[in-house]
Length: 419
Image (tube, rainbow, N blue to C red):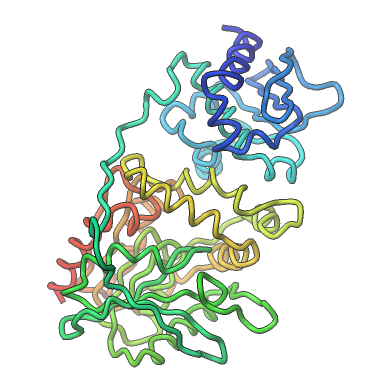
């Protein structure tokens, strides 16, 4: 099939069978302009009016590229094993391939505004190119299983003023005679990520979770400033520990907060740490992306959807996927920018030999941002830790505490029993 024939098929997909998803779920109804696709020396372009394809042509627009995707045959072939996400393809090529094999093209702000629609159009084009029915290669998701299925929720919220700022906490008020756990949320999100785990442990382990300054229900820092470095972040966490009166807590974190648990264990007395989807070195080159997170022409809640989807596991039940995506819709651009600045400059790998407390690493291996190989490298650097372990979960991803809280609690229970 030639590129123009693929483009005609893509027009049919977007205007008919997959039109509602493209226009509504992926915000395609807000896009008027052109999308170009190239493979080696061939190219084609589709023109859209508010998410409806009006014209298809060979080649690139005479007036210049609006937005699009450009790749080699090798680059387009990489969609096959991870077709659910443009972000995954770009990330994998950035990490281990030739960046010219696949890249986005066009004006950066224009792309960030419409990346969800372009990602879905590219995904549909990839299915057409490979002769595969859209969605047929995706595994079946888990059945929904709310925790608990109905009734009262054993979670209590309260505030404490810390460093002059009102900080919001939640707890399950469980017994604290076995272990006390302090839980830290992912970048840009808030402590509802731990609700299911709190319910599961409501009669067993006392859990506290905290909304970091500016997140969730916590007040921002004076002047609406944000935390953007790990040393300040770590100090705030320990100030929270002391404000709660916790002695030797087990500190749990996910993503950027997973990495921070290593810093906490290097600097403070803790009973143990649990790092979920984190790493001791997350330095990166995301400068341009971070700048766009707080750009007046870019809506972070909309521009983050496809990236969030790329991190979620293929087995995660739809209700939990929906909650994770709702988290993206609740994000504040300036807060996410600060968090990802902290993450992109975080590196405590040279101090891992300081950690002697027990360490548990939990990794959903569908997470393309924090891989099992990265987690193993962190584990290997814990040279003075006698009680260290790692659990891997196939089919689950970056938001593992939300995606599979039952498995996380089972692993955590074993870990606590070991210490």
